[in-house]
Length: 105
Image (cartoon, rainbow, N blue to C red):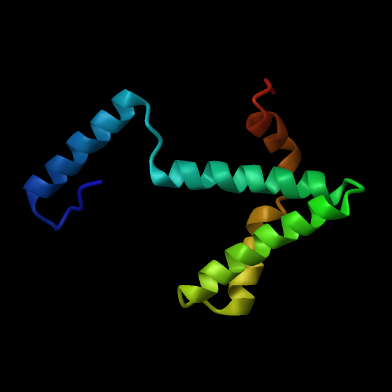
């Protein structure tokens, strides 16, 4: 994505780029990040309610890798852990299941 540096030309370039992205129906990074977070939340929910120790360990490993990534970027360990848990252990996860599984709600 072009970066606007305050000039009207940069702003117009960014608008034109966004228009092309929307026309192509290409998701921007924030939409992809939200989709990945929803998929991980559903995976965690499914793993937590299953009898598979392997799936539960994998779900916890995904959380830990996310926390490690944030800490490596300078974030506080406790705060990173709290935010990752909030994002993965969502209260509305049942609503996400048909969305990530591609079934109509």
